[in-house]
Image (cartoon, helix red, strand yellow):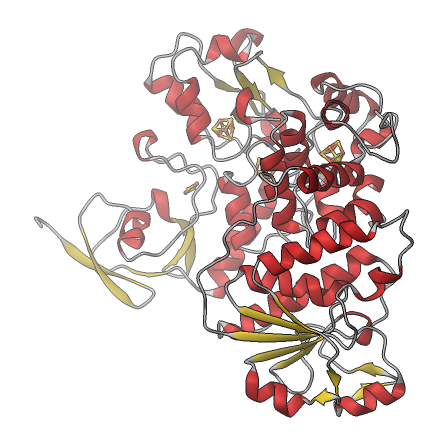
Length: 523
Ligand code: SF4
Ligand code: SF4
Ligand code: SF4
Ligand code: FES
């Protein structure tokens, strides 16, 4: 390579050439430096400051700093990571968006509710079932018995009644029982060769088994009773028909979970025996009597098992415990969420990773909407009044469910999952509220069927402005205002589609946030 020379990044030499920047050299080494305002064809914009590295004792943006022979750069150190995290957190100080909708955040099992409602509205019940069963073990049971904390946070509830989320879960699972083509169990991951035994076939144990089986582990559930369901078996028929619980247990069997009944710890099962037969054990026996607790031979607090709350582990590292035998659980969905947390810890243990409970996914939050902002959301939604089923006992019909689902305001950001800002905020453990000041007002420019611009999500990276300039857009986009009031807009207050006549698709693709999206990808 002509003129090539070597620099060092994190103690590793890398060959580079004059004119190249540190970012490119780091990428050659496979180092993932975060960037938001960097796009090769735009040249250095140097606006986001998240691509920082340390050079000669100073933090510099790697995208705008050229290499020189012998340079020594630090990238993956705690100090540099902290500086990048701070740069990301500053971008959220007045950000206006919810990566995850309020209902999604409030569901202890993290169901992507607006996505499920979009599927129901569109009549795509197979997709609705898939989305729901990604998150919910025993979905049919939750569709009838969950205390629906999601609905308490539903934005629709600030404008008439909340979306009937739980009823929609019931609707989908009722249809699954009628139409076997909907009740297809998706294939789990390839077999891992690891085996797990879960003692206790109640909501916590079944939820853990559901998630671990999907990871490809062999899961056996044992219970002292002659059937699965634990406390659910005692629920009155009008609240939970036996056929609904039965269908959910069949679903777990079809996933490949094995059940063994009439077997209790100490009679004939022992921890030693189970440890010889299985790689990991989960104790999820529900509330225990003193005698049962003593039979286990594990340390107790009162008659609850003593576990590490961060790892769900008992003093025996391969023995986990969750649910009411650790802490009494009144709410069904929370008992299942405990099973999910235990499953995540066990999964990490089996893959040799440090054991810990699942972290909450990163999300920016808009918080409470002002009446004018809520009105904007309502005007973009299709549905009106809440739709009660004509026949309460039979639940919603397909048409009723579609109309009810259309009431959802789609509070989730259309870019969630594709947003570069969200991705790096999650990777760097950013706290969206650290520098939170008064946020901007929610504003949306919408071209029917076309582009949507949300200035509150714009981080002023300048990529779209530069792309317009390179493409010689007649109007394009530009920075207007001064100081804290700078924003991106079409000159002369023109509409967004007038500004982006030829580069709309490129700008949407390259915008590192959800500020520019196409309406068909939005809710
Ligand atoms: S633009 Fe990105 S960070 Fe902002 S709300 Fe949307 S997904 Fe979250
Ligand atoms: S309106 Fe829809 S997305 Fe928003 S909180 Fe309610 S159910 Fe969730
Ligand atoms: S709208 Fe333009 S300036 Fe704002 S974040 Fe997107 S690409 Fe960057
Ligand atoms: S300053 Fe380097 S990517 Fe933004």
